[in-house]
Length: 314
Ligand SMILES: C[S@@+](CC[C@H](N)C(=O)[O-])C[C@H]1O[C@@H](n2cnc3c(N)ncnc32)[C@H](O)[C@@H]1O
Image (cartoon, rainbow, N blue to C red):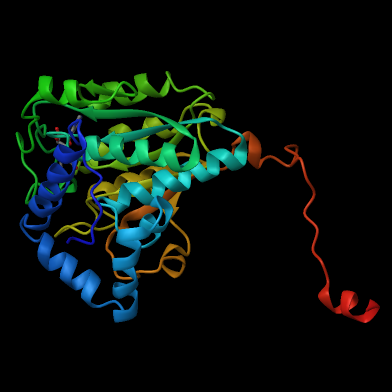
């Protein structure tokens, strides 16, 4: 039995669901490079944690499975649960999730399935939006787009109609160049469903840069901290001067009250330390969010007890 939990789209019916689930996990596991990655990430972790994982896989709650990295596309499962918890804390009922770069849609459908499971675990609802050109990668602009790796026409959307039909009612696809669609979309954001997670998987510097207006709408349209997953920063040739990291660096230069930085202390808080997604997880700090103003008051006061004084009284 696989210890990796399925989170991909599944057909109706329990038997079909289980078979599809195992099929998906196995297909994913045998994709080029995946098995080696799982071995490196998992077998370099302490044995007792891997044994514990088996029990969590069989008996654990969804939250425990996320904590033990047992959900396929953990890089979506962690931030979506994080966003739901933050939404609850700040009094929101619904959160918007975005995938920039959809290709044939495996990531977007997995995001939908993870969102559904997160709703069951937390009660928070989601609006899910996928962005893609539809025709594959546009031409690279220059060396900053890493043309030695990514080229025009790569990753076309293979079955637009099929993908559209497979999407649940709370998900939508926005087809077109993010140069145009990202800022138009930012104008549709509302405080009823603030943006709570962005997965950046457009590969190029130029596309990631063009998509950044998604993070520049009025502050009440975001959660105060928005996890941003940068998929393509471990590639050959990627650095602060190329690819998605360059787009982030320029975003930080251009926006005084919004900063995208690595997700602080994430590794020390995770049970499994060796997974690559931890290094790809960033967070957009919405410093001008109304809940981050000194005028925003919590309903309850924080009070620290003092066990030394309490012991003296006894
Ligand atoms: C690696 S694929 C995405 C894979 C997908 N996230 C998944 O997990 O299956 C990158 C996608 O980014 C899209 N893309 C790149 N530049 C774009 C642009 N300027 N506007 C819209 N989409 C773009 C391409 O069409 C391509 O499908």
